[in-house]
Length: 284
Image (cartoon, rainbow, N blue to C red; front, side, top):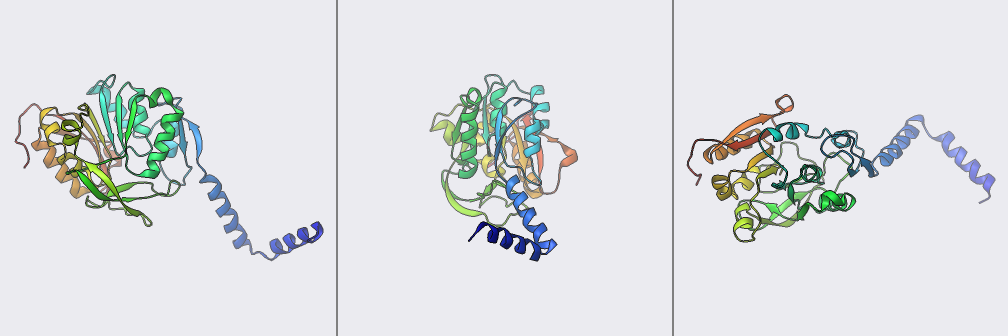
C-alpha cells in the first residue's frame, strides 16, 4: 500500500473511532506503559541508595519502597529491642527482598525464604544489583510450616497487578483473595528441622509475612521459640488467626505488642513478639 493510502486509512480509522473507544485505548496503552518494571533508587531509610526493580501500580507499596518508608514502623521499633549488626535474621516470606536488603544494610546476616518463583526471580536480581548487601543474604526457595515435605502453594505470577503474594493452601486463607492464582507444589520445612538437622544458625530475629500460614510457621519452631526466644516481627492476615498466634506465643513465653495500630484492619495487622520474663508451658 502506498504511503498516501496508509495515512488516509489511518485517518479514516481515527475519524470513525468514538471518543470513548479512543479514550479506553489510550488508557490501556498508558497502563501498559506504567506496568513495565524499571530500576529505582531508594531515597531514604535503611535502604537509601539501593536499587530496586519495581512496577508502577495504581495502588500498592512501590512508592513507599522508593521513598524508603515501607513498613517503617519495623525500623523505628527494632533498635529499641535488638542489635542487628552481626545478628542472624530470617526473612520468612521475603517477597522481592525489600526487608532482606534492609536488614542486611543494618548489618544482619539474612536468610530469605521465598518459594514464589516469580518473586524469587526479582529477589535474586536485587541481590545481584546490590552486591554489597547481596553478599549478606542467602535465598532459600522453601516455605516454612509445621512439618517437613511438600505442600500446595497458591501463588501469583502477576508482578504488575494488585498482588504478587502467595500462601500455603492449608493456612488460614487471607480475607482478600485475588483471582488467577496458580497452585503448585513447593518444598516445606520446619524451623526446628532446619536448625537441628540442617545446621542452620539460630536466628535472633524472625520477620514473618506468610499470608495466613503464620501459625504453621510458629508451630514448626516451638523448640526455637521456647529455648532461644528470637524477636518476632509478624504480619498477621486474619483476625481469627491473630487469636491463634497470640495464644501460641503467650504459651511460649512471649509478650506481644501491636505495631502501626492506626492502619490495622480485620484482614491484617502487624505485631512484635518479645520474650517475657515469666516461664509458661509449652503448647502441645
